[in-house]
Length: 166
Image (cartoon, rainbow, N blue to C red; front, side, top):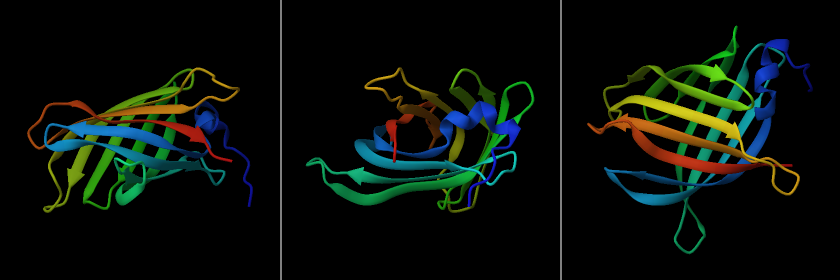
């Protein structure tokens, strides 16, 4: 079923669809790794985007490895190009981000990070999403995630470049 785009979603319209690609991860508490990722942004005619992401390890030989992270949430545009994002992780972490949208670029930081008793300690994060310069008639979506966790200060943990699928 196709729904009309809610007018409040116009600044986020560039995100709509499914994006697939690869990225890199690193952090002082783990070994560096490569990963594949699929991200989708959909809507149902209401003033929010529905977000889902899943990722998997890319082995050194380039083959698909074990599943890695998954997260789901809602992206809610606010007046004056502001944005509120809620994300839930099956690892027991829930994040609320606040930020802004300008010129096909989103910058946001955590307002709240909550976790269950058994979840790893994550205390803060920032995320940046944006369309990269056009190449071969298409624009990829790039993103970077900085994280403060396990006693480490805020630093780059993940980044990826995704192509629009279909």
